[in-house]
Image (cartoon, rainbow, N blue to C red; front, side, top):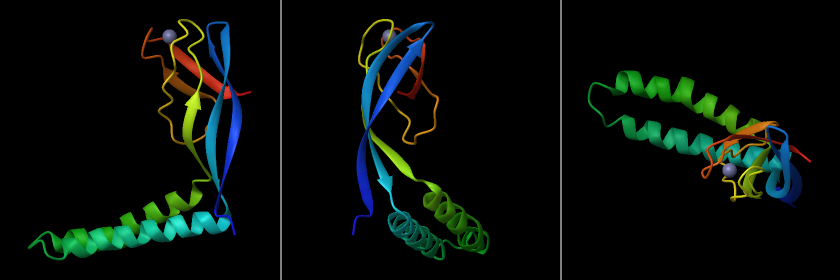
Amino acid sequence: MHHTTSHTRTIVATSSGATTHGTMEVLEFSEQGRMKRALVMAAKCIGITALCVAIPGAHFILVPLGLLVVTPAMTLYTFRVKTKIVAAKIECPKCHAQLNVLSSQENYPMYENCSSCHRQISITHG
Ligand SMILES: [Zn+2]
């Protein structure tokens, strides 16, 4: 059974009329994969909360906060993540430097700043 599948997407970078084409490696999580990641996240949150029990005074606030707020929020957030960007290979449309795609989630259009010419580049699914 595959929890994650990797895909290669074709992407287009645009900056004031100029475009370049590139590719992006994306991991897609199945329902089971997302559930598993969410459970791992829940276990981590509970583990961190358990450590807070040892903090004198603060544990009255930190433990309920950790269990009732942080753990459900992070677990739900993790479950909702369907894809993760692992690598992108695309050039800046203006200066042709390799673009660093800092986003970890696919959410088109994505905006990245070129580290070479500092222009804002929008990235869309090609
Ligand atoms: Zn550039």
